[in-house]
Image 1 (cartoon, one colour):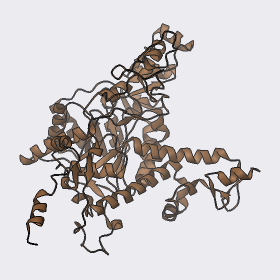
Image 2 (spheres, one colour):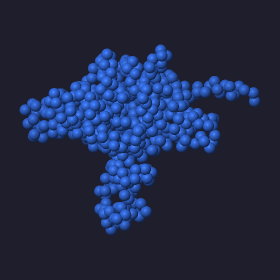
Image 3 (cartoon, one colour):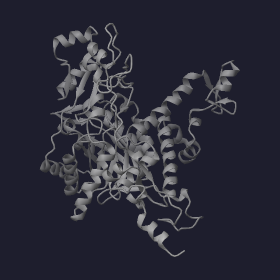
Length: 547
């Protein structure tokens, strides 16, 4: 049995002619004369271009490998007895009463209305396009949004003097978009990698833009190299090389320039450098960020080997940072090598089990334990509950990258479909009417409400309460933000229902006993009780009592 699916994937737009060999992914009979629709065949023509998911700039991708354990190997324990966090009364212990808010931070807490925040929305084109939706969606949802690495470095309008950024219109747009809608919950987090640090991004965003939460980035779950994007403009590729990025192929090579002009290839690759973690240097950087005005300093680390996770835990403890986010393999990205995304790193469940173990060991020594978040392929309310339970009491929130962006993208897409699918005019009452004569089209359209074409905002079930809350400003909320808010609204009720079933009426009461392992392997790996062993002592007391 193979856990992987090599050589053919929707991510790389490749397929095989017949059923492949499990190990190689090559067709069991590779036929001379086949045009080569598989990854090997495509690579014979386009080489390195086939390393990445396609179409670039239009997709966010995640691993398709079937890992031996994931959150489905655990079930949530329900009970019909009592309530924690509210009076055990059937009129009071109702699921809408469940408190799904949380807070993170070493001292001055960052409050979140819901225990999730976005993944890093960085310098890829798809991230730039959807920033407004995600930033405004995060602000009105009361969660954090992360402005990822390389934003200033990729901003062609940025002013850079003596190697330091002094003004970046794109970064300013991103920060101010969130700040305009901020309601006291969550925050905008800016992230930095090697190039960002060299450009002085931390100092710029903290001192000039008023950013209060800054994240140091060691890596992510989707890859173990630096950030990557593709560039379709030769002059931009040359400028990025001047700014210190690795650009492939070399845009200053005359042969490459001629090949690009001839259309032999259409995109350059921009790569960030590998970070080199060093303990004392990490402490100095944290202290520097605090001195220049950062109120909260966080760390994001990827699915590196266990020793690196131990370093992250120790350094975060010693520096007393506000949040440690650990991203497991299998998580998504806007741009990563496809085979790397599938075949490297510690998967999410395993890395969270290791995280819990390392934090527990430090806790027993009386060390400071930072608030933590887990990331890597989480998308629904049961994932959130299980992630909080598996890492309890240290994991306080979940980082959700692809899922939140998916909601924002669908919100935008549906709004655009409504606008494009019908010829329309806006009547005085604001109703979008149609000009089609085909009655059947009107009857079957998903965009018809009460016999009339819908307004864009009518696509979203949460519109009535948002319109009431924001009044005239509601029209400024983009459809993507409405989609994101509506998705989080669904997650909120779903999590409330799961928590009420476990009789836990606030996030802080979720613990490891609220889940059980469905296999002995999962129990051994995690320390969570096997389902057949759960409650054994209490069962013996119940059944051993007098009849």
